[in-house]
Length: 194
Ligand code: GTP
Ligand code: MG
Image (tube, protein in one colour):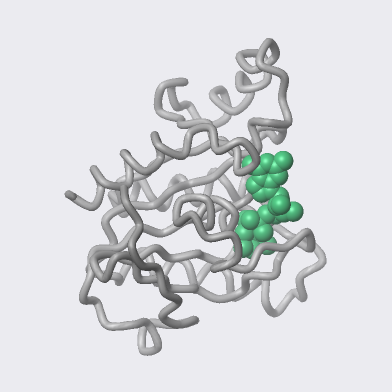
């Protein structure tokens, strides 16, 4: 994918504040701090278009980005961060669920898992929703630079066991090295029908 333009459109927390449903759309979902914003920045080749943070839970709204004036990428708020106020945490489920249920232009969700963590109930809840709502899902294991190559297969076993997905369902990605970037783009292009 050649990225000619990428612009922030708007933030939203419910359908009446989403941007117009004029372009096909791919959303990025996963626990707080898993690397959603970093993946989007890496895909777009923009270091700072999407704000990333060492402090989990910084992205608490849906953020819409228009790419090449042709399709949207949506940075969804992360879940599962204890230090986020309870009121904000309670909003997460409905905010994401309503988006997944109602967005007519949604073509797929990139679902991120940290290579060093066994997926928990919230991760699996999201996977259930995606399956229930029949949203094409692109599972991505992030921060793969944190694991030695020789340890990869062993490291990823608990993720495969917890999700019930085969190894080849996952793309592995590192925002540091750029590994997997091309593969993730290809899967996004396919989901967008480009
Ligand atoms: P929220 O917005 O809180 O939901 O987090 P997020 O999923 O958008 O994570 P973000 O992209 O802000 O990254 C969180 C932290 O992980 C930052 O310190 C990033 O630099 C770091 N990080 C993200 N991706 C990678 C990666 O592939 N490798 C390594 N080593 N660090 C990463
Ligand atoms: Mg973020």
